[in-house]
Length: 459
Image 1: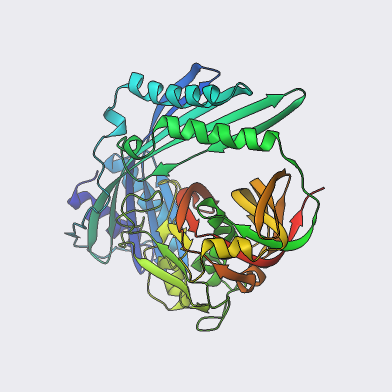
Image 2: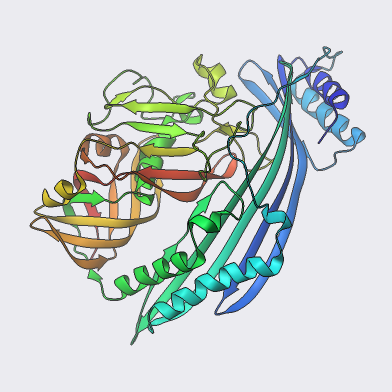
């Protein structure tokens, strides 16, 4: 990390092109990856991402530059380049920094970067063995252990100087089941914002067996017929529907430039009154949590929708200037190479008033989406399409045979109104969210919910 005097010098230079604000972001991140396929360790890698990003503002115009040359000369060169792109160079203002230490509410107990490589290999191997031993029809298991140890330092011309360290661990296991000419897959991909103590909560055996179970279920499933029907979406990664279909539309990067279906709707009813949605970066040990965002703002519990009414957006520094609203600790980026923008952290629909058994019992004929996959969305229109990894037909209020090939197709604003039952088993699932500032870890979540009617794609 850089010393205070050098940071003050760099910030002063960044202001010299007529900027009214400047920021320096320093990063040193160690990314570990251990990959196993068919019982063999394919690769064990560890990379270090280290560099500095410099940003200057004038009003709502920004210039961003980054460099991996962290010598004084390299940093000055980068800062001058940013200043020159902003305007004619003049003498920059003097900057005085005061260090601020924020509480660490996400401590890691076992650092992945210092753990023995053989131990990491054994963790992945245990998950794969558990998967293959689950059923003789499991013919392949592939596992990946991901670890991240990230230290950042942030300084800006408002006088802020702060730093933070964040550690993440995740084990992903894919299982392939085969019977005759038929093959189907299953997966389990939990992760947390903690060190390798993560495996005290989620043993490799639990992860391997869950991936295998899903593969076996899909192996015996028939294809679903397409149509419009009520759908019960299970807790956990089911929250990806809200994340993609609605969450991105509540980010300042879209709202601040009028490119969101949620523009101008603050204080208005946009969802069923049973829906309360929150983005909370303060949840201890959660996959998407951080102490401070990548602009140095403490993360917060931001209520987005309360009882169906739009209460707030997720706002970074640039979005704050565009919208005239306070920052919400939502400025995030993959690395120093990217300029930050507004992003989600841990975003979920909160527990509601309905009993889970009543949700299933309320469906005469429909789909129970036990596990959701990925999808896509247009933030401007809210149109989305998501795959269902594990699904079942519901008949006469009972979960019946497994089906495959299902997808959920709809529009964000409509699905918010059509969520008419919200259960009480809130859980989260982990993913990586891609946007203009790169790929960042996010939690999605919800309890079991019912969508009264949605288009289900199938055969």
